[in-house]
Image (cartoon, rainbow over all chains, first blue to last red; front, side, top):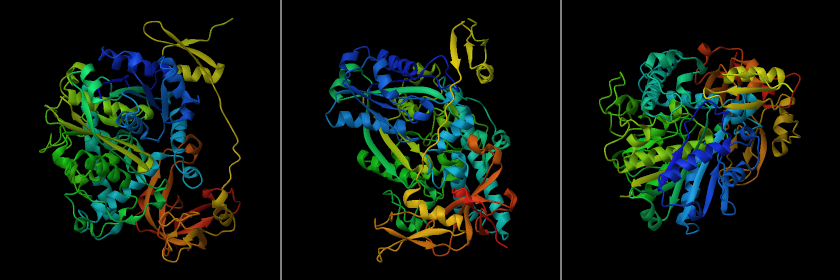
Length: 443
Length: 174
């Protein structure tokens, strides 16, 4: 990767259609590598999630057209919430296969074109329309179902196993889960106050998050990402081209994808695919993935780590930009990516490991800085224009590895000290598809 | 010809296009974006295809799951599948018990636009004796504070079927 660009994510960008948004993100990426001219780009991979939001079929062709890239080759990608991550990997494959020397990955979404609850309906069309959609047309409900079971498996049956009354034990466990999820929301919103591209930067307390409107029990508004307009681009090329374009390239050293059943109801109760630092005994009595964990995230993480030669992600990665569409799914993803064992996600959060060391969160975070997760603010605070999101993560990770956060954000706070490796993680509907890509400083 | 009314806020524009069909959004620099109302509605000719017997079953007050016909596999599904996800063989229909237990649940205070008028509603994933997968349904006749994982529940069927998954729902078992 040699360059990237992002528009500021916003609730609405009525002054730009999707073509102009991508053009802005493209111009930003091109401006940073002046040795690359448009005619040296061999083609593109373009992603957006929903034809319903765009209300324009073949919108990717119109992007290709607007950027003046015709008649070069292009492919449109769509994979639900993981659309941007898939686009990034498709661009990677175009170069790795030898098909192209230089490729543009571009993604966008214009979600402001419909009212919020109609937008929720559109998103829920990415669930089984025979069995799931007619029950509420509401993805937050599906994630709430998942976290209620996650809390049951990992808090009710552990921390609250001494409570005799079943209902009381579950209430206490859920309250504890809500409190810990709020830590994630506090972290991501506060990180975002140092990121000018973020949609909802703010300082919140755990109590603020808990007091915000209940959307689908136990998830409150501040624990959930919002809909956005935005675009992001990444330029990928071969190593020899990269050397000509920049003295700060970033190498893609691992890519992984995973999938799972579309319906939550079909998820099996089997065994955990293991990272090298785990053993089968760790999970002897754990029915997996059930509805509590994202098997696709585990598969994608394993594949990417294996390719990158990483055996222990916690030790060998310096940061992660992961798909926190919900505060719950950030905690579930810590476990999928092997940062802690399954069942340890809540304690891992409370340890402070995913927090930044140099930010005062108003929380006791003794292990802050161990592996910052979503230093940019993630989806919860940056926004989630679906087709752009995975590429936004790539751009933030790229700047992080380049050491150019200060230059791009006008604020050095989020810049980690000489990070060598970072992972980006893009996730579709209830974990039905996940991509993980691992990036490494290439200079 | 009259120009559409101009506004400084997106929300005002949204209201205006609902009334007159067009409005202008003005930004601080005086740039103008013309925004129009653009309705869209469609009737799909949706076939339940291989899932059809399940929905016909609901209309008769029956809950149908499926079982893999490969004897070496025999995986059982509470949400029916035409073919087995474990081994790929065709499945056969089997009737599920009317009683089950809550595997997980939530209370939704919001929903997709078409469902907002039904809020709050409960969703529950149901586990059944004799089935290895779950079924997602609405859970009625109880409120958030009463629901818990493991709660015994039983099926109810719509007297006037709409041929939708909402033709079945569960209530706390008596």
